[in-house]
Image (tube, rainbow, N blue to C red):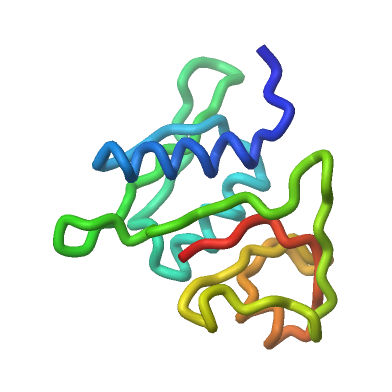
Length: 132
């Protein structure tokens, strides 16, 4: 069955695995998913990720989740821009997540990056999700 929002599916898989206290989860692989996972790793929300070949032509991302003292590091992860409602933000209008304690993940002309990196690069874009 086709998924209408693949990035939303990835975010939901991460959220559900964290709530179930799983050590890792798998999701279909794509360049966008890999870039979002790389931003999550750089920001310290997940331990690691890697691409796994399931069978010829089918690849998945295996995402190792991170816990601190038994509690998930990701308290909240939500999709902001959806296929039915795209949300774009200029650099000066980029919202802070929980006053800077969380991050927004953006798709910019320079690639997928966190809101902190986007402010440093002085570039805006589509707000994909927010993580706290």
